[in-house]
Length: 250
View (cartoon, rainbow, N blue to C red):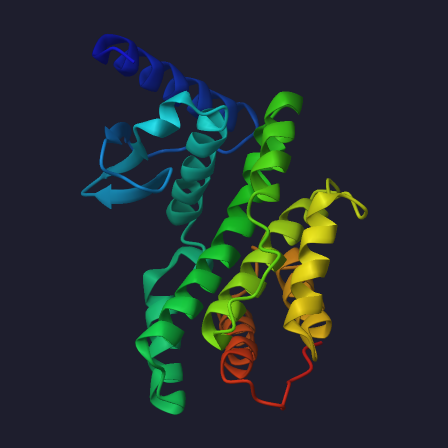
């Protein structure tokens, strides 16, 4: 894609996404910029620099049919940050992780799994906005996108497999939350193969994680959000360490 066309595509996409958000009642009040990082391996992310929220996307994302959805997703993160939502308060994650580390003696790999799981929680909440804003064609692209997240074969490493289980739970919960999940589609069968290979309590563990994410509430008060996050992490730690004890969340 030529530089001039790239700049025009990014400006048009950002303007379109900001306008769509505003039309649906999700007005972004801070300045937002959109830039490309040719070395970026993921599709994109958002960060704050001073007063400006900066959305950074990969070069290959420019040619994706998910470009509009990606920009809407990052704008939704910005919207939650502006609102001061507890899911987007860095201190909330840091405080919870520090307490868990002190209590459980987390290894670096286990900490990465918990951070990944926290990102799933953030993403399922912000995507309430994204799915509200997107049109039919974009919804179809989102369904295909989440279908690619499903793993059907465990690795044999408890930490990696817990990460994959949580990832499968997130993908399916994302579509179930919006009544877009096909209970007899490819995602269902790929996940079923994963759970069968994982064995033991895998189906029960999946049901717990999927339900937790599907029913997550963006409007919880600080104390309730903190308690939910601690229970979520506690469940994942039990899975990573293969512990028999499981805490039944209500």
